[in-house]
Structure formats: structure tokens, C-alpha cells
Length: 323
Figure 1 (cartoon, rainbow, N blue to C red):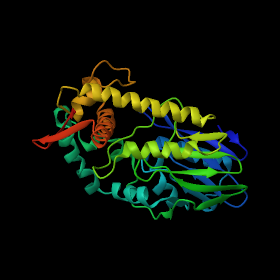
Figure 2: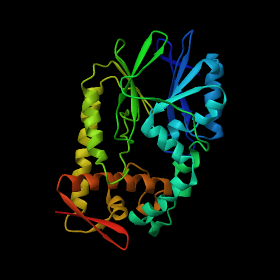
Figure 3: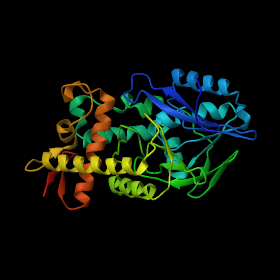
Figure 4: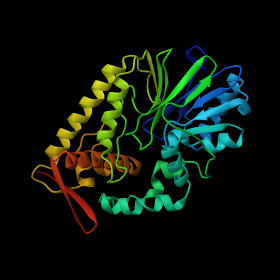
């Protein structure tokens, strides 16, 4: 059922079955010329059905409809190839767009065999075949139209300016409408829950990058922040302060865990507090072990970057200890 959240802007909840996120907020902006869909849900029948129901309810002509993908995660990009086959033009940034197309190959996912060892997750029988990114991402490469910061998408009376907001993913992007004080932010800012900041490689401190992106958006004058999960945020500065505080608590927690102890990523993650209705690490679903370990790793790497922790490698497993 359509939910008009602003003039000619509709929010649809695309279900994510058996996933703690529950649904992705897809936003559809309609106009007499062209329409714009923002993010899609997984590449799975339930998401496709919900998306096509939204298209039908709004009476969209897909030949006159564009798709903007905020970032590479499969709950945002999963249906991109499906929609492109139906005549939709697909826009995204060059960094995450390139990664989405890599994710359509088996070779991309085989590197997770190395992560499995490095994170010490082999003890749990974790493998990439259970990763939602592997299961629900597009299976064919997409002919993207690439956008860069300050490019503008015109949709009816809206001029949506692309802004770089990396951190949650290496090339996460948002759309800013200055005249109406709107931001379509993907997973950069979320209502109630905190975006997962994970490990993407040793070349960049992605937690520090995320902090800078939050501070960048803090400076914008906004009335509505259209988030991809949970509820729309009206006071973005308060929410950004909450997110920064959350990660500071996380860093303090992780530093305490590795004080006096040399621990693997997996063992660090197992001692962190998580908002899941389970009693122990052994009860974590395998996909959540991937996400928890990735988040632990990003915080551990940040502590190394700021000189509060050191790391070592033994038998291909990486260990961290507070300095």
C-alpha cells in the first residue's frame, strides 16, 4: 500500500525474509517525465513481487523510470539487473558499481575463504555460501550509468545532488535536495538501529572515513532524512551525535576486551554486546557471524590506526592486543 511521505515521494517496505533488518525502505519519486526508484531489496522472489506491486500501484512506465543504488549491499542492489531487463536505467557510483559487478562473479566471493581464516571463523564452519551478499546479489553484470559527487538527477520539481558518503561501504552515495531540505541516505544514517561499519581492506580506516562522512552530513540543513531501514529521521544532527557516541562506546568496549589479551577477530566479536535475542556466540546465525566479525574488525583496525592497539599474525589468523 503506497505511503506518500512527501509530495510525489512514496515509501515502500520491501520485505527481507529471515533477516533481522526486516525490510528495505524503497523510495519512488514520480513525475510526468521520468520516475526514480531508490534502492531495491534482495534478488529474491518476495522482493521482486513487492517491487512489482509498487510499480503497478503507482502506474509506473518502467521505460520512463530510473533506479539509483545508494550502495553495493544486496538488500539495496539485488533487483538492479532484474529492473534493467525491464527497461529501467540504473545509476550508481563507480566504486560500489564496480564492486556490485565483481560480486556477480564466483571469483569475488572466493576471497572470503581467506577472510574465513583471517577472522578465525573456520572454527565456526562459516563460509561465503551463507553470506547474504552472495545469495541475494545480482547474478549478471549491470550496465550502470556512473555518477560522481555533485552530479544532479532531475525528477519533476526535485533536483537531487549526489554526495559521497563513504564508510558503510567504500563508495556509498546519498542524494541531497537542497530546496526541499531532503536527503535520501541509504544506510549512512538509520533510525533506531546503527549502520554496520565493516572491514573492506587494510588500505583504509573505514571507521574514520565513516566518521568524516557523518560530520559532512551534519553540516547540511535537512528536514527529512529518508533512511533505508526503520523510520525517517527528522533531527539528523541529534541522530548523528548518537551514532558517533555509539561508536565511541564500541571502541571503548573493544579496547577493554583486548586489554591484556591477544584475541582473534572472531573471539573479540564473541565478547562484544549485540542486540540479538540469543544467549551465546554459538547461537549466532552464520550470516550474523560475518557481520559481527566485520564490525569488530573495523573497530580493531581503527584502534591500530590511532595507536591504541597492535596486531600480529599467526598461522594466517590475525590477532589484536591493546597497547
